[in-house]
View: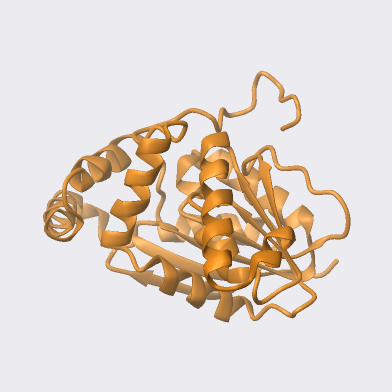
Length: 245
C-alpha cells in the first residue's frame, strides 16, 4: 500500500476478529458458513453484474476469498484487495485449492491479490468494468464511506457497475431495542458459539448506517441506483451504475 497521510482514517484498525491471526480467520470463515450462504450470495451478485468475458472486476475487502474463486470463471481478471496480509494469504491458498479441485488450476493466474483497502487501493491501467464491496463499508464512519464511494467511482468506466452488500439498517429506529434483542436471539439460534458476541461488537463499535443515508451517499458519488433491496431490517444490496461524463 502507498504511504498514507496522518489524517487518513486507519483501515487497519481491527474491531472484534483479529484478521492477522490465521486461526481466527479460519474460525471466522466457518462461522460465516453457518449463518450465510456465501456461495449463493456471490452468485446473486455476479448475476446482477452480468459481466462480459472480457471484464476486469475489483473486490475491495475480499476477506476469505469466496468471490474471486467464482468470479474468475465469468470474466477476464479479478483483483482481490484486502487490508490484512494474513487474510490475503488465506484467500490465495483457498483459491489455489478450490480451483485445483475444480480442474481449473490455471485460473489462479487471473486473480491478482493486493494488500489495500477502500481508502488506499490505487488502480493502475484501464478503468474497471465493475467493483464489488461485500460487508466492508460498515468498517468506515459515514464521512469515509462517502470518500470511498467517490474513489470507487473514479476507478470505474462510465456505465461501470458497483455492487454493494452490507449490514445497513432499514428497521424503524424508534424500535431499536426490540429489534436488536430479536436479532441477537435469532443469530444465537443459527450461528453457534461466538456469533452473538460478534454481533454485539458490530452494533456497538462498527459503523453500519441507515438505508436512506447509504442511498444518498451512493448517488452523491456519481452513481445511479438500479436496484436496492433491504432484508430483515439489517441487510441491504445495491446495484449501482456510474453515470456518464
